[in-house]
Length: 256
Ligand code: NAD
View (cartoon, rainbow, N blue to C red):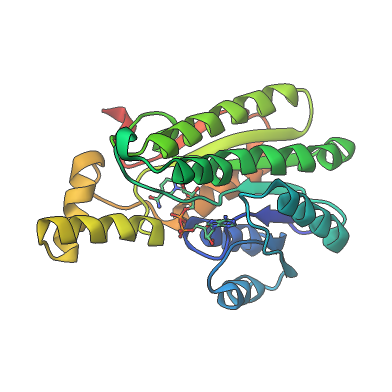
């Protein structure tokens, strides 16, 4: 379905980003990957799906590196048809104890990076008359949890950016939507499980159940594969008129 298209997924070396990259590649999209950690392993997983894969190591907290990544993508494949703004980090502390430099990093990586990548991707999409922008927000783009001020602020901001981008392009073939996962068992969440297990002296499985039980009625983690399938739907012709939504995949978290 996406043969001939190029997707760029930020933070695609791990977790949800890697799951979304694989789902889009399985539909034939060539891929520009980004992120840190096991770059070669992640690239190999996507390349195994038979598409062309390029990688750019831009630090998403740095606008000039984001600009270099977008220029690199255009050089490699002509243009970016599908942009998935996914890179993100977390830090957990009460507002009065929240380190200002962690606040700045979360706002930059989880929110401002989506603005920079979007503003640089739009002109080529507008010239082509087609594009898909998918922002990986969170249930925390819709509701709050204690000790996540920067994350909740950034994700609410991303949902706002999603709506404005959708509206400004509403008469075109470019759609912009947000995906709002509940708990997904990636390294970002495993750290929170580990912290709970250590604080309460619990085995890891018990800490996972406690984490789910506090928020997620299904008592199940959403998977990167499920989120990848939602991204594929948003890129499909059936998604042509889905514009500016924040779509939960949260096991009932925000239904309460
Ligand atoms: P993860 O830690 O598995 O992956 C994060 C990715 O972002 C990695 O590829 C990492 O290298 C990359 N990254 C981090 N900082 C970066 C930077 N400065 N520049 C470039 N890349 C950077 O985490 P994940 O859980 O897969 O999170 C992906 C997105 O999903 C994030 O935006 C997160 O907020 C969101 N999300 C996660 C959950 C969850 O439960 N895991 C729930 C809702 C939303």
